[in-house]
Amino acid sequence: MEVPKTEIRAGDAILWKGGGPVDASFSFILGLFFPDWAKRDWKPWHTGFVICVLDDGEIVTFQAVAKGVHAITYPNAEAMGDCKTYRWLDNPDQAQIDRYVRDNDGRPYDFLGYLWTVGGSISMVWFNHPYRLSSWMFFCWENLSNFMCYMGKELQPGYEPCLLSKIINALEAGNAVRTLRLAKRMEKSGF
Image (cartoon, rainbow, N blue to C red; front, side, top):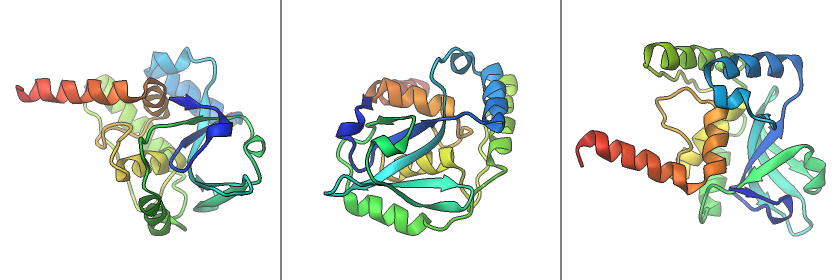
């Protein structure tokens, strides 16, 4: 569920609007395989999450960027630019957030992660066989998805390619998507 930037808190997801030629190229490819993405008016591209909000209003985030995975601090919500914040976690545990950050700080950026995601997406759509390649490096979508899974509330199944289209659909739908996913799993299991 989207929340106003004025209500941002630890554990919230942040999605920034893209704009460069690489973003546009990959976004176009994503739209070919996922029509719901192609129809979106506001298309984010970069993701991160909030580590904490300090008393003076500074917002400390955790992002995977070209220099690697690390904390980035903004003086206030307006300084974060063209982004939206989403509340996915019900009651995030600050100690668990800090542990995730400590365990993943300094990881290298996975420049090839987008290519593996395109490959997994093609396989998922054409052959009904999703796969997700992952390594010790992270790209931003993967960092956010792994964080939410670590916190106990996955955004998408871990065996699927880490897709921004699925991430934003889940964040916008809120808990409804998790309930639907659980119901489908139970139905397949014969419950």
